[in-house]
Length: 266
Ligand code: NAI
Image 1 (cartoon, rainbow, N blue to C red):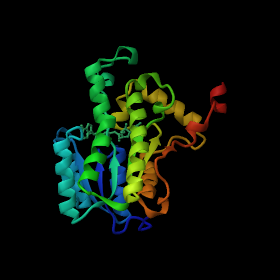
Image 2: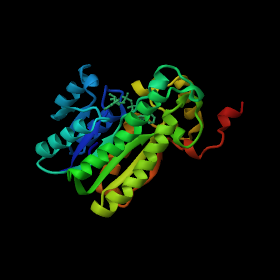
Image 3: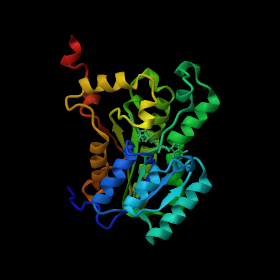
């Protein structure tokens, strides 16, 4: 059902890899709510072809950009400014990757070159998107920017490895930049901390299924789905949340407030 929450709004959505991706759901939902979308993903992801199908469905340009590379981000905003004829009302950062996790390196034994890559792709890319967008005048007054995090930024989930550090940095960047963009442009910057979700990135974590089942049992509402996450992100893009900024907002069925659930008491 559409409420027309994003009628007349224009935005950039990163990270829609396939139909399981959280960003894929957000793109569909934002479009349904009346937004015009520009999609972007890493050049290697675009070779797989699925983002192209989404772009066609949404009548959206699909711009290749490695979000660790400033020149790519500059081109992305140039394209967006040209395509929309002005600045964007919303941005979704939905990007994460850890070479340490991919190579099965435990947290105490991480490789430091990989660590730099994890932080660059999963957190510093957000700062770069905000810095370049600000410099180019690409954010409309009163706009809304959202990035996705996981509760391992705050609590220990051993197999989440160096992604925990990346998410802690991501949440700090949202807070810090939220201050500056709020003062300058009335732009909101928020983090949505999402339940475990069966996506390519999510299932790449060792023990994902056990983490998923545990969170599902612990959460009074059960795990939040990617589709529900999209609803929440769209609400944050809308004017209905115009005074919410610099927050880490838990979209997790109640998990973050739990100690232990009855189901786990045996
Ligand atoms: P996904 O695998 O569908 O999306 C990750 C995206 O990051 C992919 O589209 C990939 O191409 C893109 N990407 C990787 N490196 C990039 C680069 N250098 N430049 C541009 N794009 C790049 O997985 P998912 O789960 O939808 O991930 C989206 C976000 O949600 C990530 O930040 C993830 O950490 C976060 N998240 C995921 C949870 C889960 O359990 N799946 C839970 C909480 C947060």
